[in-house]
Image 1 (spheres, rainbow, N blue to C red):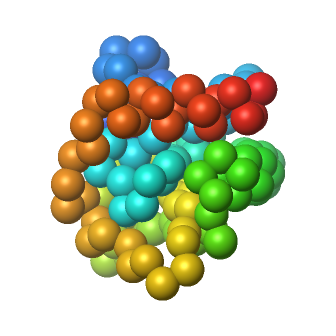
Image 2 (tube, rainbow, N blue to C red):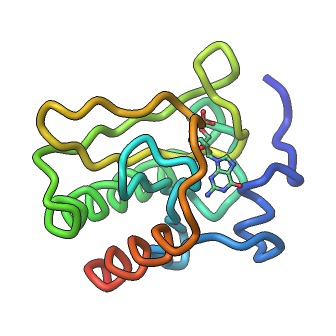
Length: 140
Ligand code: 5GP
């Protein structure tokens, strides 16, 4: 497998070199909004430690990311009045992965509303800021 690239976009976000709409942070995990959400509130949960994907992540970091993804999903149900939550995680290009720092997609869903295609439309900054504020408050 290809080695972890410390210059991937999410590594830069984790180091604070690029901005993000943060919703949650602890010593081992970081969560922020996807800037091209497949549905309002689409969140990405990452381990802080370098990991390319599920194939190289230490099991403890993977378990912690799953725990935080669950917290985010529960908060999204309230904050976005969701009827359900879709959780996705892609590995290597063949598996649909585009950014090579492990991340779990947590996407609030409404009954009968299809998700937008991946990376189809950038959300407006004020909308992302508002969603991040509400979700962060529910997770604090
Ligand atoms: P993957 O296919 O690797 O699981 O998904 C990568 C995700 O990252 C996509 O959903 C895409 O919209 C999102 N994304 C790409 N660039 C950025 C960025 O600069 N900031 C944020 N917050 N999300 C990004």
